[in-house]
Image (cartoon, rainbow, N blue to C red; front, side):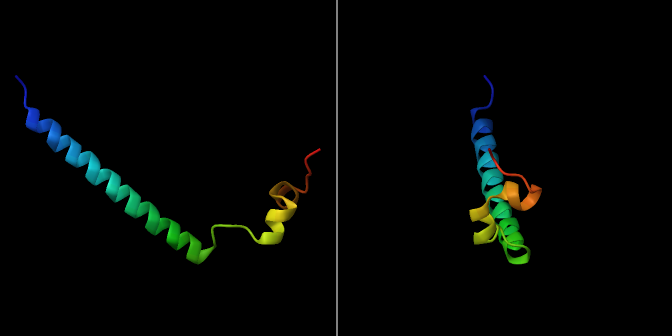
Length: 59
């Protein structure tokens, strides 16, 4: 009983959703990188974000 073909249809739907989300995420990431950048500057990274953003150091 049931419809085994439905499982295949749902698997295709899942695959399409995963591909769509991966492509959309990559596009969003590229836009963010082009507009404001993904990483902080090397000096900021070296000093530590706690110090740069909050003026605090780890003790």
